[in-house]
Length: 508
Image (tube, rainbow, N blue to C red; front, side, top):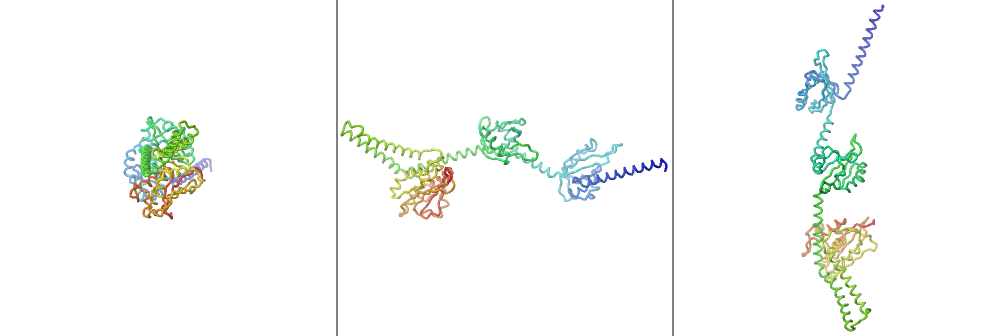
């Protein structure tokens, strides 16, 4: 073999090796096209499928061979096809690169959201379009997530709640329309959180809320926002942004204006206080004879001691001071007693708001018994209060609690009068749980009929001809406003027994 033949053989070998390498590379790219989860396809100028990868089976339900010779345009959603055709000249005549999101019909008839990247291939000499190479992927989940986010954004923007988005350094970088309108927020410039919240609420946010949200993810409670001229009470929900890629220190604050609710609650409290005051006046009317007795007894004593002192002066025009000391001391004692009882009666009937504070239960019970004692004496019914000496102090409003006890004592007296055998109304107290004491008022009447036990606390319900049916209803409301409760003991063996549950100052 001469040199020429050897060189030719070398060139043939090199060409074969090159062809083998190209064939291997072709098989590699073919393998990649068939292995990817994206649909790789090649189309003619009119959109006809010239090739489709195996992903067509998973994404669309078609075998690749079923798509060959079929125009892709026939499978577009009608609403998306016109958009593609209107923009397609960019694919053919400009950069040869185009990306579009559209719906493509699967073999089963449903539509799949595709995002397709297309690139044209042209003849290097003539520039004639040879085919279009496309890579399509299913973006249905992404489209659905974007649609959900858009719907949520529309809800946030249209809600009347004040929605704020907070970035680092407590800067509000975004707010919905309601917040922008109410607080005159600029649309682009970040606003400091301190410009929107009252000082105490801002302190609570910084010291308690944000650390809690960083740890637990959310917080809710009442805060005070502010505008230029007024304070705005809001029910706030604070959320931490914990999505993938979110930076620390990003929060969402949802604030609902509760001014109307606060005003309604204040009105309800005023209405409740007015009703309770009217009830106390009615009770004072029932206790009129007792009030007269309370006033008459010290006034009579004062008159007796005064008469004695005057008589002493008449018998001895210049009596010594020591001779007048005793009657004057007795007069002073009775005057102090009278003043004390008048203050008590005045505080009982006057209009006032509730003031819950720690107090001794025995003192309130004794005051209520003194108010009712004269009527019990007239009815020859014994009033027997027996409270343990070691009871803890309770949390209550003294006048409101006294009103409840007086209502129960008057009801017990009325029930006892209807039973000739009734002799005693008992008042007892005991520890009934952790931080709770129960005060019981039990009579020896005929008890509460079973058919009335569920309605006895309803407003205007009464079994007495002269009753208004408001005493028990008001009493239960007063107890609930103090954090306690009033209930009827259905297992009482003698007459009716009402239990007053009260919070205590310390654990029991």
